[in-house]
Length: 231
Image (cartoon, rainbow, N blue to C red; front, side, top):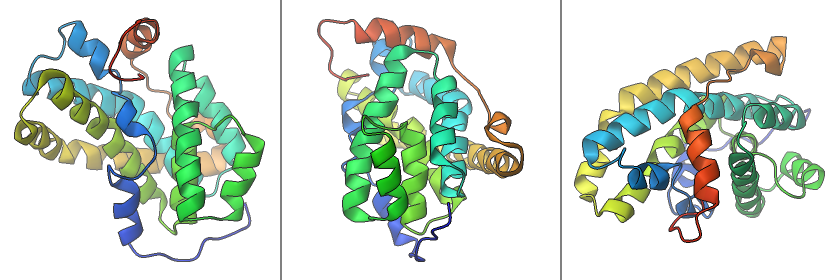
């Protein structure tokens, strides 16, 4: 894309990563609700294991897609790459629903021609990591900033959900996030490296790490007649 965003302060990153940013994530548990019901998350230790696994699989993939979009790769090609890396129909629908909600917020906060073009090309929603990267670009942030937002969302969503689902002590939950900080930095570095490769080699160079159990449980969760979270 040829349009470059105006520079912005790092404060834009705080706004984008803030849990109060109206991107719709509060309605989703990132697979935590199904894991709680199955007994795989019972306490803070289980939550840490769940988040670390999600971070190094789907989190890495999402962060690389976001970094690539923020770095200027074609968002439509990236959206196709995201679709190919999301085998679960339920999670593909979730990704586009979240992308559509994020796009609404992004166009109101950091309007720009690239966001408008993607919204017109994908009226039913592009995948959330792609929209996240393009939002970061529109806000004047870097590819690494976009990756940081993606990995933080990967673990903060389930953590917030588990506080509600289990009545987990919020202090313990926040401690889980704090202890994961080195892992977040590692995944961001890897994701940014993949994005740089993809800029020269195409979307095939992006990671396709996945968590099959999350895909399986997402399909089951989508069929629950009663649930607290949409995913």
